[in-house]
Length: 374
Image 1 (cartoon, rainbow, N blue to C red):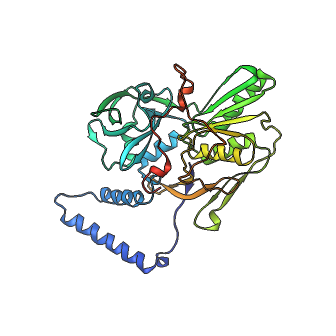
Image 2 (cartoon, rainbow, N blue to C red):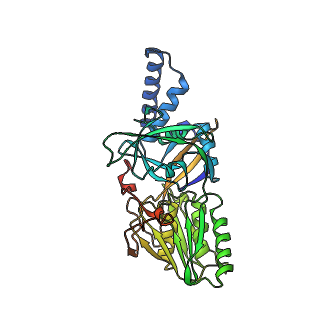
Image 3 (tube, helix red, strand yellow):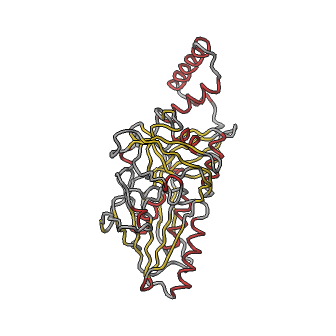
């Protein structure tokens, strides 16, 4: 879950304490030694970017440095469309790992599964790769090809998977009608149009059902996305009350989002489906509806990502994705590395041939607490 911010530090260097001066002096010494003595000539930009990557990697698995090209790709992704193979990835125990394939994408159709370890991309090892570096290698123009080499528990040797990149259009909201006036809505991710798409879906369902007698909101395997969209989605269902609060290092970084009573809230019984793939912005929605007594949450323990990343644009067009806060549910719960406990725990058992329900299936359990430095 992240927000965008343009930030430049105008503070005086004199505000730095002596220990920081000492550390910066050490960095300058090492930089100078490498530039003058390394066996081959080294580009200064390469060294600086490597140092920044190392600095950010030491913090947590969600902070990252983005080159100008990667930053542009992130901006495109939040709009819900990009070229690639369609997987959410993370670094698990120093290995590039699939969190979840996105429904209907090349990776999903090729049988890539949650928990798959990507050990090579186009024949090159992914050892020590950053998430943003992996994203750059996996994405590309439509109809170009990329080979990922995967390992999983049921494979005795690595398996090459040849994928043809496609335009990944994340349709974040899908819906259908069950019998007896029950509606089903799935939110696959939270990007710039999610709340608008949800409102349109609910209007259509209301027009067809007249009235809607019950609603199932499916947030399984939803990796999250934009904080503002999570707030907007929760607000659709809540007439009043706190939706989420965030806290950072200083009091000035504390925020609280409250529902607006616009008289258009959904009033029928609501069930929210979650699992271990429900993360970040999706957990905000589930937690807000649960704490406000608006919905019955059903499924398995969620992922447990309660950190907020701020996108800080830099002068050269690059950016930092930096963890700047943690969010708390309306009752003040921090679910970081814990997740949301459903009101009713139900493990997923896929019915044979039911593709719609297969979005809840996961081969392995992967949660925030498993990530190094969470």
